[in-house]
Length: 401
Image (cartoon, rainbow, N blue to C red; front, side, top):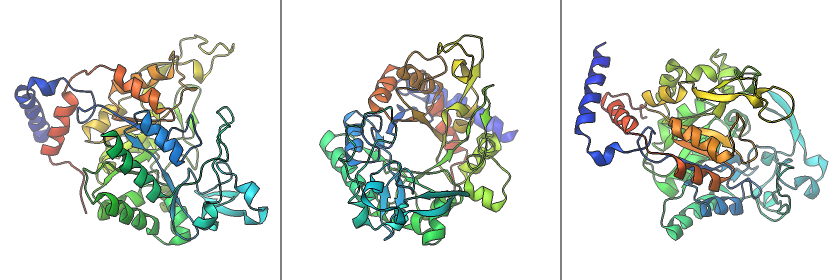
Protein backbone atom coordinates (compact mmCIF):
# COMPACT_ATOMS: atom_id res chain seq x y z
CA UNK A 1 0.00 0.00 0.00
CA UNK A 2 2.81 2.41 0.84
CA UNK A 3 4.53 1.90 -2.54
CA UNK A 4 1.19 2.35 -4.35
CA UNK A 5 0.61 5.63 -2.49
CA UNK A 6 4.09 6.88 -3.39
CA UNK A 7 3.60 5.98 -7.07
CA UNK A 8 0.24 7.80 -7.15
CA UNK A 9 1.76 10.88 -5.56
CA UNK A 10 4.67 10.88 -7.97
CA UNK A 11 2.28 10.56 -10.91
CA UNK A 12 0.37 13.64 -9.80
CA UNK A 13 3.60 15.54 -9.25
CA UNK A 14 4.96 14.56 -12.65
CA UNK A 15 1.77 15.66 -14.40
CA UNK A 16 2.16 19.05 -12.76
CA UNK A 17 5.87 19.50 -13.41
CA UNK A 18 6.23 18.18 -16.98
CA UNK A 19 6.34 20.99 -19.53
CA UNK A 20 3.59 21.20 -22.15
CA UNK A 21 6.11 20.29 -24.86
CA UNK A 22 6.63 16.92 -23.21
CA UNK A 23 2.97 16.14 -22.55
CA UNK A 24 2.07 15.77 -26.23
CA UNK A 25 3.76 12.41 -26.72
CA UNK A 26 3.00 8.96 -28.04
CA UNK A 27 1.24 6.31 -25.99
CA UNK A 28 4.45 4.28 -25.75
CA UNK A 29 6.48 3.46 -22.66
CA UNK A 30 8.94 6.31 -23.18
CA UNK A 31 6.58 8.66 -24.99
CA UNK A 32 8.62 8.51 -28.18
CA UNK A 33 7.40 7.40 -31.59
CA UNK A 34 7.11 3.61 -31.94
CA UNK A 35 9.80 1.89 -33.98
CA UNK A 36 9.40 -0.03 -37.22
CA UNK A 37 11.49 -3.22 -37.45
CA UNK A 38 12.18 -4.67 -40.89
CA UNK A 39 11.23 -8.29 -40.24
CA UNK A 40 14.03 -10.31 -41.88
CA UNK A 41 14.56 -7.11 -43.87
CA UNK A 42 11.90 -6.02 -46.34
CA UNK A 43 11.08 -9.70 -46.72
CA UNK A 44 7.72 -9.05 -48.31
CA UNK A 45 9.52 -7.77 -51.39
CA UNK A 46 12.86 -9.60 -51.54
CA UNK A 47 14.22 -12.93 -50.26
CA UNK A 48 14.56 -12.70 -46.50
CA UNK A 49 17.78 -12.21 -44.56
CA UNK A 50 19.79 -10.84 -47.46
CA UNK A 51 21.75 -7.61 -47.56
CA UNK A 52 19.46 -6.51 -50.38
CA UNK A 53 16.32 -7.07 -48.25
CA UNK A 54 17.89 -5.24 -45.32
CA UNK A 55 18.96 -2.33 -47.55
CA UNK A 56 15.44 -2.03 -48.96
CA UNK A 57 13.99 -2.00 -45.43
CA UNK A 58 16.32 0.88 -44.55
CA UNK A 59 15.37 2.76 -47.74
CA UNK A 60 11.71 2.33 -46.82
CA UNK A 61 12.34 3.93 -43.42
CA UNK A 62 12.76 1.03 -40.99
CA UNK A 63 14.36 2.04 -37.70
CA UNK A 64 15.80 -1.44 -37.15
CA UNK A 65 16.61 -4.44 -39.31
CA UNK A 66 16.26 -7.94 -37.91
CA UNK A 67 18.88 -10.63 -38.56
CA UNK A 68 17.88 -14.03 -37.17
CA UNK A 69 21.15 -15.75 -36.36
CA UNK A 70 22.49 -19.30 -36.59
CA UNK A 71 26.01 -20.74 -36.48
CA UNK A 72 27.93 -22.38 -39.32
CA UNK A 73 30.14 -25.45 -38.88
CA UNK A 74 33.14 -23.15 -38.41
CA UNK A 75 31.30 -21.03 -35.82
CA UNK A 76 30.40 -17.99 -37.92
CA UNK A 77 27.15 -16.15 -37.18
CA UNK A 78 25.02 -15.90 -40.31
CA UNK A 79 21.53 -14.54 -40.96
CA UNK A 80 18.97 -17.30 -41.49
CA UNK A 81 15.50 -17.71 -40.02
CA UNK A 82 16.26 -21.24 -38.82
CA UNK A 83 19.28 -23.57 -38.57
CA UNK A 84 17.67 -25.43 -41.50
CA UNK A 85 18.62 -24.13 -44.93
CA UNK A 86 16.29 -26.12 -47.18
CA UNK A 87 13.36 -23.71 -47.26
CA UNK A 88 15.20 -20.43 -47.80
CA UNK A 89 18.20 -21.27 -50.00
CA UNK A 90 19.07 -23.27 -53.11
CA UNK A 91 21.14 -25.69 -51.04
CA UNK A 92 19.33 -28.73 -52.52
CA UNK A 93 20.57 -27.81 -56.00
CA UNK A 94 24.15 -27.21 -54.84
CA UNK A 95 24.70 -30.17 -52.49
CA UNK A 96 23.55 -33.77 -52.51
CA UNK A 97 21.13 -35.39 -50.11
CA UNK A 98 24.10 -36.90 -48.30
CA UNK A 99 24.61 -33.47 -46.71
CA UNK A 100 21.22 -33.70 -45.05
CA UNK A 101 21.07 -34.75 -41.42
CA UNK A 102 18.44 -35.41 -38.78
CA UNK A 103 18.57 -33.41 -35.57
CA UNK A 104 16.31 -32.57 -32.69
CA UNK A 105 15.13 -28.95 -32.86
CA UNK A 106 13.16 -27.93 -29.76
CA UNK A 107 12.23 -31.56 -29.22
CA UNK A 108 11.12 -32.17 -32.80
CA UNK A 109 13.04 -34.58 -35.04
CA UNK A 110 13.93 -32.60 -38.16
CA UNK A 111 15.65 -33.73 -41.35
CA UNK A 112 17.13 -30.96 -43.48
CA UNK A 113 20.33 -29.25 -44.56
CA UNK A 114 21.63 -27.68 -41.33
CA UNK A 115 23.84 -24.58 -41.34
CA UNK A 116 25.95 -26.22 -38.64
CA UNK A 117 27.01 -28.89 -41.17
CA UNK A 118 28.38 -26.33 -43.65
CA UNK A 119 31.40 -24.03 -43.49
CA UNK A 120 31.04 -20.34 -44.24
CA UNK A 121 32.82 -20.89 -47.55
CA UNK A 122 30.14 -23.43 -48.50
CA UNK A 123 27.36 -21.16 -47.25
CA UNK A 124 28.67 -18.39 -49.48
CA UNK A 125 28.09 -20.56 -52.55
CA UNK A 126 24.36 -20.65 -51.74
CA UNK A 127 21.76 -18.13 -52.87
CA UNK A 128 18.57 -17.11 -51.09
CA UNK A 129 15.09 -17.96 -52.32
CA UNK A 130 11.66 -16.57 -51.43
CA UNK A 131 10.05 -19.16 -49.11
CA UNK A 132 6.48 -17.91 -49.59
CA UNK A 133 5.01 -19.13 -52.86
CA UNK A 134 2.56 -16.20 -53.01
CA UNK A 135 5.41 -13.67 -53.16
CA UNK A 136 7.64 -12.56 -56.03
CA UNK A 137 9.95 -15.43 -57.00
CA UNK A 138 11.92 -13.50 -59.62
CA UNK A 139 14.77 -12.68 -57.21
CA UNK A 140 15.49 -16.31 -56.33
CA UNK A 141 19.11 -17.32 -56.78
CA UNK A 142 20.50 -13.77 -56.86
CA UNK A 143 21.56 -12.91 -53.31
CA UNK A 144 24.12 -14.38 -50.91
CA UNK A 145 23.65 -15.36 -47.28
CA UNK A 146 25.17 -12.57 -45.14
CA UNK A 147 27.19 -12.85 -41.94
CA UNK A 148 26.32 -10.83 -38.86
CA UNK A 149 29.43 -8.72 -39.49
CA UNK A 150 28.11 -7.82 -42.94
CA UNK A 151 24.70 -6.88 -41.55
CA UNK A 152 26.31 -4.64 -38.94
CA UNK A 153 28.49 -3.00 -41.58
CA UNK A 154 25.39 -2.27 -43.68
CA UNK A 155 23.46 -0.76 -40.76
CA UNK A 156 26.37 1.43 -39.72
CA UNK A 157 27.13 2.61 -43.26
CA UNK A 158 23.46 3.47 -43.83
CA UNK A 159 23.35 5.35 -40.56
CA UNK A 160 26.02 7.60 -42.00
CA UNK A 161 24.50 7.76 -45.48
CA UNK A 162 20.93 8.53 -44.38
CA UNK A 163 21.70 10.76 -41.43
CA UNK A 164 19.40 8.74 -39.17
CA UNK A 165 20.19 5.90 -36.79
CA UNK A 166 19.65 2.44 -38.24
CA UNK A 167 19.70 -0.19 -35.53
CA UNK A 168 19.87 -3.98 -35.60
CA UNK A 169 17.61 -6.42 -33.78
CA UNK A 170 19.36 -9.83 -33.80
CA UNK A 171 17.57 -12.96 -32.64
CA UNK A 172 19.37 -15.86 -30.99
CA UNK A 173 17.76 -18.79 -32.79
CA UNK A 174 17.36 -22.04 -30.86
CA UNK A 175 19.89 -21.42 -28.12
CA UNK A 176 19.55 -24.92 -26.64
CA UNK A 177 20.06 -26.50 -30.07
CA UNK A 178 23.26 -24.54 -30.61
CA UNK A 179 24.49 -25.20 -27.04
CA UNK A 180 24.31 -28.95 -27.68
CA UNK A 181 26.46 -28.55 -30.78
CA UNK A 182 28.96 -25.87 -29.76
CA UNK A 183 28.87 -25.71 -25.97
CA UNK A 184 26.86 -23.77 -23.42
CA UNK A 185 26.64 -20.02 -24.16
CA UNK A 186 29.15 -20.24 -27.04
CA UNK A 187 26.58 -18.63 -29.33
CA UNK A 188 25.74 -15.88 -26.81
CA UNK A 189 29.39 -15.10 -26.02
CA UNK A 190 30.25 -14.79 -29.68
CA UNK A 191 27.25 -12.53 -30.31
CA UNK A 192 28.11 -10.27 -27.37
CA UNK A 193 31.75 -10.05 -28.39
CA UNK A 194 30.75 -9.03 -31.93
CA UNK A 195 28.21 -6.45 -30.76
CA UNK A 196 30.50 -4.95 -28.11
CA UNK A 197 33.25 -4.55 -30.71
CA UNK A 198 30.89 -2.82 -33.14
CA UNK A 199 28.72 -0.80 -30.76
CA UNK A 200 30.18 -0.88 -27.28
CA UNK A 201 28.49 -2.20 -24.14
CA UNK A 202 25.68 0.25 -23.50
CA UNK A 203 21.93 0.18 -23.09
CA UNK A 204 21.82 3.29 -25.29
CA UNK A 205 23.27 1.53 -28.32
CA UNK A 206 20.80 0.95 -31.22
CA UNK A 207 20.61 -2.80 -30.67
CA UNK A 208 18.06 -5.20 -29.17
CA UNK A 209 18.84 -8.89 -28.64
CA UNK A 210 15.80 -11.17 -28.70
CA UNK A 211 15.07 -14.82 -28.03
CA UNK A 212 12.14 -17.18 -27.48
CA UNK A 213 14.18 -18.93 -24.77
CA UNK A 214 14.71 -17.45 -21.33
CA UNK A 215 17.84 -18.97 -19.81
CA UNK A 216 20.06 -17.52 -22.51
CA UNK A 217 18.59 -14.04 -21.99
CA UNK A 218 19.19 -14.36 -18.25
CA UNK A 219 22.78 -15.28 -19.02
CA UNK A 220 23.12 -12.36 -21.44
CA UNK A 221 21.88 -10.02 -18.73
CA UNK A 222 24.98 -10.96 -16.74
CA UNK A 223 27.43 -10.13 -19.53
CA UNK A 224 25.98 -7.20 -21.47
CA UNK A 225 24.07 -3.96 -20.99
CA UNK A 226 22.63 -4.13 -24.52
CA UNK A 227 18.81 -4.21 -24.43
CA UNK A 228 17.20 -7.66 -24.23
CA UNK A 229 13.73 -8.78 -25.33
CA UNK A 230 11.82 -11.90 -24.33
CA UNK A 231 9.80 -13.22 -27.27
CA UNK A 232 6.39 -14.80 -26.60
CA UNK A 233 5.12 -17.49 -28.97
CA UNK A 234 2.00 -19.62 -29.43
CA UNK A 235 0.82 -22.38 -31.71
CA UNK A 236 -2.31 -20.77 -33.16
CA UNK A 237 -5.52 -18.92 -32.34
CA UNK A 238 -8.55 -21.03 -31.48
CA UNK A 239 -11.94 -20.52 -33.14
CA UNK A 240 -13.19 -18.65 -30.06
CA UNK A 241 -10.27 -16.21 -30.23
CA UNK A 242 -8.29 -17.77 -27.38
CA UNK A 243 -4.61 -18.57 -27.75
CA UNK A 244 -3.65 -22.16 -28.60
CA UNK A 245 -0.56 -23.42 -26.77
CA UNK A 246 0.80 -26.66 -28.21
CA UNK A 247 4.41 -27.86 -27.89
CA UNK A 248 6.94 -26.78 -28.96
CA UNK A 249 5.27 -23.36 -29.16
CA UNK A 250 3.73 -23.44 -25.68
CA UNK A 251 6.71 -22.30 -23.62
CA UNK A 252 10.43 -21.42 -23.86
CA UNK A 253 12.22 -24.65 -24.75
CA UNK A 254 14.57 -24.29 -21.78
CA UNK A 255 11.44 -24.25 -19.57
CA UNK A 256 10.35 -27.53 -21.13
CA UNK A 257 13.74 -29.12 -20.43
CA UNK A 258 13.78 -27.80 -16.87
CA UNK A 259 10.24 -28.95 -16.10
CA UNK A 260 9.08 -25.36 -15.57
CA UNK A 261 5.26 -25.46 -15.78
CA UNK A 262 4.88 -21.85 -16.96
CA UNK A 263 3.64 -21.26 -20.49
CA UNK A 264 4.27 -18.29 -22.76
CA UNK A 265 0.84 -17.01 -21.74
CA UNK A 266 1.87 -17.17 -18.08
CA UNK A 267 4.78 -14.85 -18.85
CA UNK A 268 2.29 -12.13 -19.87
CA UNK A 269 0.59 -12.05 -16.48
CA UNK A 270 1.69 -9.43 -13.95
CA UNK A 271 3.88 -12.02 -12.20
CA UNK A 272 5.31 -13.25 -15.48
CA UNK A 273 6.17 -9.75 -16.64
CA UNK A 274 7.81 -9.02 -13.28
CA UNK A 275 9.95 -12.13 -13.84
CA UNK A 276 10.93 -10.92 -17.33
CA UNK A 277 11.75 -7.47 -15.95
CA UNK A 278 14.40 -9.13 -13.82
CA UNK A 279 16.55 -9.77 -16.89
CA UNK A 280 15.08 -8.00 -19.93
CA UNK A 281 14.05 -4.57 -21.16
CA UNK A 282 11.19 -5.59 -23.39
CA UNK A 283 8.76 -8.30 -24.34
CA UNK A 284 7.82 -9.40 -27.86
CA UNK A 285 4.43 -11.14 -27.94
CA UNK A 286 2.72 -12.52 -31.02
CA UNK A 287 0.09 -9.91 -31.85
CA UNK A 288 -3.07 -11.99 -31.04
CA UNK A 289 -2.06 -11.84 -27.37
CA UNK A 290 -2.65 -8.09 -27.40
CA UNK A 291 -6.24 -7.66 -28.62
CA UNK A 292 -9.60 -9.09 -27.66
CA UNK A 293 -11.70 -10.32 -30.57
CA UNK A 294 -15.47 -10.53 -30.89
CA UNK A 295 -17.67 -12.81 -33.01
CA UNK A 296 -20.62 -10.80 -34.30
CA UNK A 297 -21.88 -13.07 -37.08
CA UNK A 298 -20.42 -11.05 -39.96
CA UNK A 299 -18.73 -12.99 -42.78
CA UNK A 300 -15.91 -10.49 -43.27
CA UNK A 301 -13.80 -12.53 -45.67
CA UNK A 302 -16.79 -13.50 -47.80
CA UNK A 303 -16.08 -17.23 -47.88
CA UNK A 304 -19.52 -18.23 -46.63
CA UNK A 305 -18.12 -19.52 -43.35
CA UNK A 306 -17.76 -17.94 -39.94
CA UNK A 307 -14.26 -18.50 -38.60
CA UNK A 308 -11.48 -16.83 -36.65
CA UNK A 309 -10.85 -14.63 -39.70
CA UNK A 310 -14.29 -13.05 -39.33
CA UNK A 311 -13.89 -11.88 -35.74
CA UNK A 312 -13.41 -8.16 -35.13
CA UNK A 313 -11.09 -6.51 -32.64
CA UNK A 314 -12.59 -5.34 -29.38
CA UNK A 315 -9.81 -3.49 -27.59
CA UNK A 316 -6.75 -4.36 -25.55
CA UNK A 317 -6.39 -7.55 -23.52
CA UNK A 318 -4.41 -5.57 -20.94
CA UNK A 319 -1.04 -7.07 -21.88
CA UNK A 320 0.30 -3.77 -23.25
CA UNK A 321 -0.76 -1.92 -20.12
CA UNK A 322 0.72 -4.56 -17.82
CA UNK A 323 4.01 -4.56 -19.73
CA UNK A 324 4.29 -0.78 -19.51
CA UNK A 325 3.38 -0.85 -15.81
CA UNK A 326 6.30 -3.28 -15.34
CA UNK A 327 8.61 -0.89 -17.22
CA UNK A 328 8.91 -3.12 -20.28
CA UNK A 329 8.77 -2.05 -23.90
CA UNK A 330 6.46 -4.14 -26.06
CA UNK A 331 7.35 -5.01 -29.66
CA UNK A 332 4.86 -7.20 -31.49
CA UNK A 333 4.90 -9.30 -34.67
CA UNK A 334 4.37 -10.00 -37.56
CA UNK A 335 2.47 -7.63 -39.86
CA UNK A 336 2.10 -8.58 -43.51
CA UNK A 337 0.37 -6.79 -46.34
CA UNK A 338 -1.65 -9.85 -47.33
CA UNK A 339 -2.76 -10.91 -43.86
CA UNK A 340 -4.34 -8.09 -41.89
CA UNK A 341 -7.34 -10.06 -40.58
CA UNK A 342 -9.91 -9.22 -37.87
CA UNK A 343 -11.97 -7.03 -40.14
CA UNK A 344 -9.32 -4.40 -40.87
CA UNK A 345 -9.73 -2.83 -44.28
CA UNK A 346 -5.98 -2.86 -44.97
CA UNK A 347 -2.68 -3.76 -43.25
CA UNK A 348 -1.80 -0.13 -42.51
CA UNK A 349 -5.05 0.22 -40.58
CA UNK A 350 -4.25 -2.97 -38.67
CA UNK A 351 -0.83 -1.75 -37.60
CA UNK A 352 -2.19 1.68 -36.71
CA UNK A 353 -4.74 0.02 -34.42
CA UNK A 354 -2.05 -1.79 -32.43
CA UNK A 355 0.16 1.31 -32.41
CA UNK A 356 -2.73 3.35 -31.08
CA UNK A 357 -3.05 0.91 -28.18
CA UNK A 358 0.52 1.79 -27.22
CA UNK A 359 2.86 -0.85 -28.60
CA UNK A 360 6.44 0.43 -28.74
CA UNK A 361 7.40 -1.26 -31.99
CA UNK A 362 6.13 -3.47 -34.80
CA UNK A 363 7.87 -6.17 -36.82
CA UNK A 364 6.71 -6.09 -40.43
CA UNK A 365 7.69 -7.73 -43.72
CA UNK A 366 6.65 -4.47 -45.40
CA UNK A 367 8.49 -1.61 -43.64
CA UNK A 368 6.98 1.05 -45.90
CA UNK A 369 3.52 0.09 -44.65
CA UNK A 370 4.78 0.22 -41.07
CA UNK A 371 6.26 3.69 -41.54
CA UNK A 372 2.96 4.90 -43.02
CA UNK A 373 1.07 3.40 -40.08
CA UNK A 374 3.26 5.22 -37.54
CA UNK A 375 2.72 8.47 -39.44
CA UNK A 376 -1.05 7.96 -39.30
CA UNK A 377 -1.48 7.59 -35.55
CA UNK A 378 -2.18 10.52 -33.19
CA UNK A 379 0.01 11.50 -30.27
CA UNK A 380 -2.46 10.81 -27.45
CA UNK A 381 -0.73 11.96 -24.25
CA UNK A 382 2.21 11.61 -21.94
CA UNK A 383 0.98 9.12 -19.35
CA UNK A 384 3.30 6.40 -20.63
CA UNK A 385 6.27 8.77 -20.49
CA UNK A 386 5.48 9.75 -16.92
CA UNK A 387 4.99 6.13 -15.94
CA UNK A 388 8.35 5.16 -17.46
CA UNK A 389 10.07 7.79 -15.36
CA UNK A 390 8.16 6.81 -12.24
CA UNK A 391 9.02 3.15 -12.69
CA UNK A 392 12.69 4.09 -12.79
CA UNK A 393 12.31 6.28 -9.70
CA UNK A 394 10.53 3.47 -7.88
CA UNK A 395 13.61 1.32 -8.40
CA UNK A 396 12.16 -1.48 -10.47
CA UNK A 397 14.52 -1.14 -13.42
CA UNK A 398 15.90 -4.50 -14.40
CA UNK A 399 18.88 -5.82 -12.53
CA UNK A 400 22.30 -5.62 -14.13
CA UNK A 401 25.07 -8.20 -13.78
